[in-house]
Length: 405
Image (cartoon, rainbow, N blue to C red; front, side):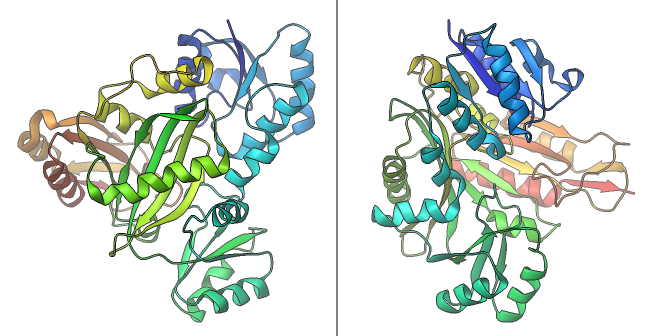
């Protein structure tokens, strides 16, 4: 039985499901995290043989705790699926002589500029890009690329602190909001649809792949409070429109030497059909996308990931049965949720195709829409026919309303 150190086993929430899956796949799980034990989700707490409560931001404390544990436990591998501590996991592997991604292999997944340089060298189409550590450097990069440009943190996650500037005046506004970011990537804005290419791999082979379609693009979702962000996991990956992106995804994984675990890549499909790389992370997608995959496949990809990293296989490879769409809702107004309009009518219209509803209850304080993709709740719909799912997601986006006051 393998002993696995899981960094941050209970935060974000989805991490607890991966922790539980490791135990379910036969591992002895040793958790190391900065959540107090009483704050751990039950799924994580019950899956671990031992939990070490230590600040993950204090690398010396983490190594001290692990060396102490090593006197009592033999651990065989280290897993971390939360972006901020993936380099810490790599340093632990190197220090203890454990298999898995090294620091050198991990850095291109965290540093967006290094990432794109590796892929440029492999002949993969990336947005034109420059790194900048000064305001002057950002202005110079924007002048070389031409507007519009995207400015994002070199080591960011998702679309946090990511902005589009269509002019010098807008870039000046963007720079006023990025003083806390030490290094940014200034990139060409690629006009097109934004999709994902997500995989579970083992031994350098793709065991499962997923393509998801953002409607609208995540950057738009972050700019406008009134938008209900929609994501659709696609059932049929054989359609011609997806082949360039899938092929590019395989080339990206090969160029970066990825071997085992989850990956989450974003890419653009232009009006001409060109596939352009966006970015990639050596982790699962967030915002409950793994759950959306599970609804699309009637599967458990938390367990699939655990089987892949522990045993080099997925026992029952998931098959895509449905297109599955998620809709995240943002309440109108401020304060506490006062009422919900439209849910009963939409459920009556779509019946069993509505497979998950999780909205904040009346009386709960609404969330800060800028700080969470989840907003004030989410709905999942699914159907074999893509047009049916598009219709349902558009109806839930337009006709379901939460109010706060």
